[in-house]
Image 1 (spheres, rainbow, N blue to C red):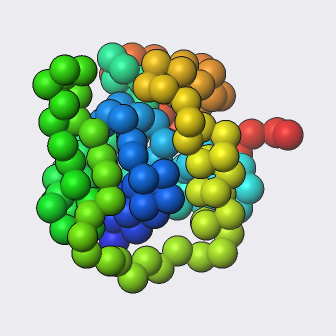
Image 2: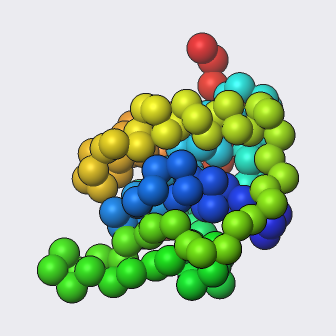
Amino acid sequence: MHDKVRDVIYYLVNKLGFIESRTKLVKLLYLADVEAKNKTGNTITGLTYVYHFYGPYSPQIIETALEMDGEEIKEIYNPYFERYEYVKGEQDRDIKLTEEEIKVLEEIIEEYGKLGTNDIKERAYQTEPMKTAKPGEVIKIYLTAT
């Protein structure tokens, strides 16, 4: 699972070139997992998300991003906005994502990649798993009827 999280973070940062905050990074992974579950029956990362103050959250995402910092991606603190931002790193990563997973990630990039942190946070709150969870609970990502 840990390598999948690294692969997804690397893929998103490299495709977008810039992710404006930790919150946006977490929400992109969450939305990718929800979409993958609906399209393939499985999440991409296998992460467990909790209904946190700012919406769905998994501490493993930030832990993994910090492990990757300086090599595969760079986490830069922006004091003006008081947030951490992500840009491409200097080291390439041989990702092991399936074609289905890449297709889901491309859809997430297309739909949410240009949204600001607050907009993507609102989109995450609008997902069915978040609507049925309560603050502090584990969010159950399940197949939804389409």
